[in-house]
Image (cartoon, rainbow, N blue to C red; front, side, top):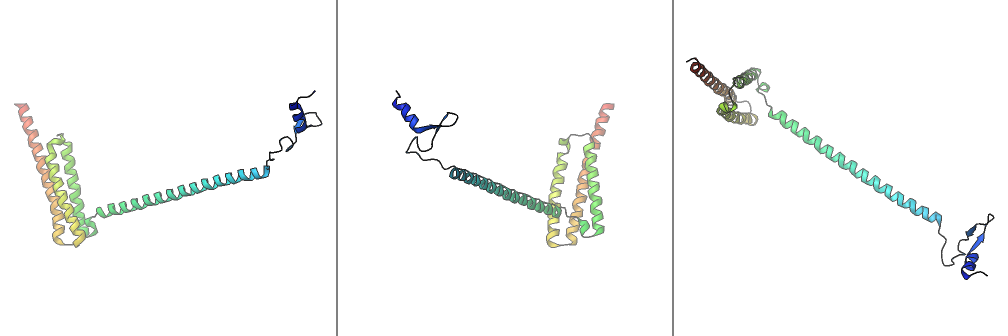
Length: 191
């Protein structure tokens, strides 16, 4: 005799050709619905489509952001380059004669500074010279600013040349002091 459970199972299942029980949809549990596979797959592909659209939107936003940042960097670099070009104002732009004088003075100043550095004295020993050169550079920048604003005026040009002459004098004075110090040291060693 069959138990009620076995009867229930037999009523809900039927046998296939190979004698394996296969549930018949809807007959086992009358209150359950049969899932609609097509509807489920449409839902899954809709979710995948949303994820794909979201990913494309995020990638597009990232590309736009990258484009904006690179444009800002490029514009900033162009502006800085133009400012650097403007700051390297040369008297050669005004006159070849004055420009040649400026080049001569710049070379002379640089050579004399190299002489001081190669003299073997400590940097502390020529700090005063560097401070004076800095003050002259500030005056030079004022003249260059005036030249930009007021144009080619002889007083301004003379002031610029005078700055170079003052630099050379200051450096030569320092070189003379270094030479005297070395001479005194040599005399002390001889005695």
